[in-house]
Length: 113
Image (cartoon, rainbow, N blue to C red; front, side, top):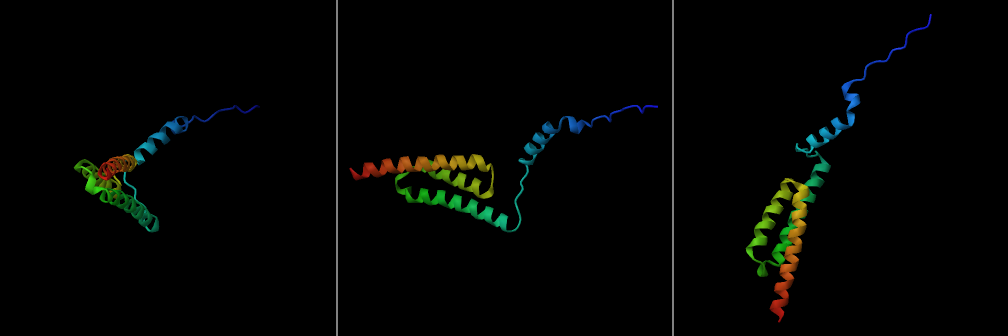
């Protein structure tokens, strides 16, 4: 007698595994996960140093800038410090640095002549 072959049914999670993993990754980004211990301290120092660098850049050119960059720099520094929308806040910080450099350099050139 020859045994009958049979196949076990596939679980639903095995069929759409990639779609479930993508959804899990997207959901994980919605929740705040701050590391504990030394990695958490290092992340906090990195965020603080980035915010301080942006604030000090503004302070160096504060005499020649309007109030627009000040408000932008304060909001971005706060967002970076607390980790709110970090990728967007960092991109905004880079734009604020560029704005300060261009506006500050233009004011510096006009005061020399």
